[in-house]
Length: 147
Length: 88
Image (cartoon, rainbow over all chains, first blue to last red; front, top):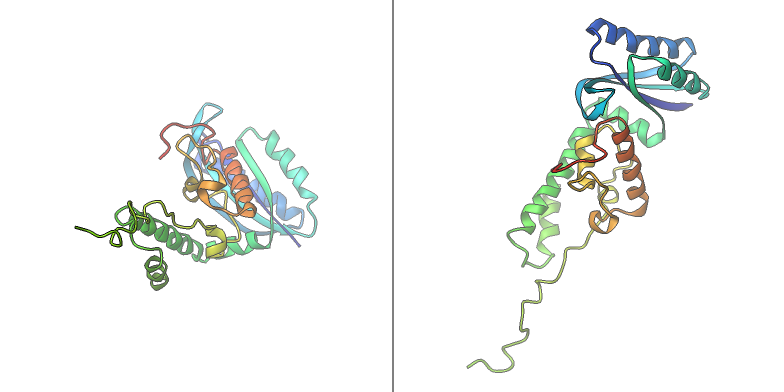
């Protein structure tokens, strides 16, 4: 069983229905090829970090799917490339950690984990600024308590 | 008058000591780096959007490579800029 993930940016100029139907064509295409669609993540309209085709925003879709072979990828990429409604796409193969990550993310576990580590990091930064003097020993103890 | 024994160091010896760097992926058990999570990846680039070296981030080689791949994917999808000014 191989897991893949294809993320693409749909032109925001299209109407809402057109955008949805664009995404649907690709999920249908995968279903017709006997691929199991694990999840379709509609990331929605986002600001692009740099303009693509003179557009400054785009509608992001991320489709996770699995199947026995990867033969559909070429076909899918060709279709995405030919489609004028698609501004950009990226298809990747997920390893077992990626599959688990996406699953956890859907269950709302990941955001917390990373925020926690982020928080710790910021705590450490704060610690570092006012008190560089104390020996490193007390700091790890404090962080352990946080955990 | 302070005798010679009282003065052990002319300067504070703790000033130069740095906290040991560590790989946060190993430490927190993060196995997969998501290219769609641009906010997280921003920690690994400088203000111009360039990747920070390992000697600054403290990442292990394995995860630094994966961070680099994730950042490059995010750039391709316009989630992160290729070139920027005052990113942070």
